Image (cartoon, rainbow, N blue to C red; front, side, top):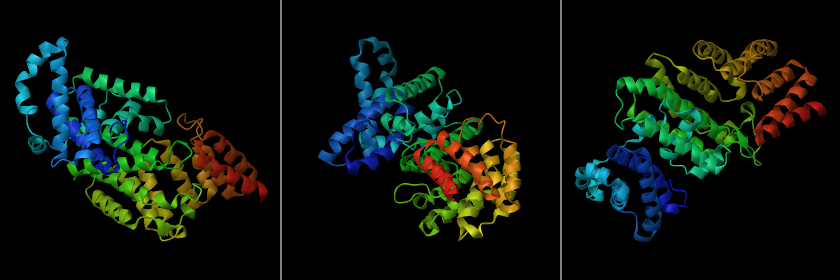
Length: 416
């Protein structure tokens, strides 16, 4: 999207059409950075003209037509590009002079192609996330910078560098073949998963959740699912997002305070999202080739299908985490596995599992290990140890709702 305010009636449509327009222009122009600039100008023009003149009959074709016109005008007005103008002149009548209606009929949905380009292995994880949110998610540079708590110039530079890397790599903008898709799909799903996690539980700031990021992750994963309907891990990731996001309304209180899973009002959970998620993961698991997202979705389904926290089938969750631990070395898996084991075998068994994570550098300095150990120590009756670790976790987290919750737990134990 543009960095200018959008007319309320056009915002949703433009956010949906922006990646499709960018994909179509990229495919024809073969220059990601130039195409992105041209589409941004077309979006700005739409925000100025559509509220006044009405939404055109072919809005996607209109955006493509205007963006391609901008590119043509830029080439024709730049004397330093005369040689390039000559080389593309043959393409201009077909791609530029076409009407918006023709452009709309010729344009497919290139969202998946954009996702694969933005998640190319040459990009760092942070750059891939930023570029995906900008080019495919439709967020402004300012929105992305605020979401990840970095200055606007820093985020703008990160996105600019990512586009330069893509241009320098000479990646062709075309449908990836089977080998390329297999090689890049894991990166695409991982980036979408990280975007969802940041939206569902913001790593910093005053709000527990960034609903816009979570919604974008779900929307983009749906786009991938439409193109790859038979891929079990794509279905598993979409199911995981739906089953997790279904609890959104119950996760915070009136003042934005965090409400843990076992204390949530399950009547507030989204029953439709749960039903869709359960159906997706059930179908995916029957296809075989079980992967990480399918197992995580299955765990989420066990939680969501329990009418009360006391009805949760913790033994099944422990079994699922045991399978997941064999295919993933993510320390957060072991952390959550310890919580599940504690529910089945008691807090001491969970604490013994946590002891294996003490030397993991991926958890050092963070708050999660201290928070989980504090919870299990509280259950084991070690109030002094629990208070100290709740306070340590509160000091380490940069999320204000999480800090408030952890501080509250320590205070209640101290007063007891």
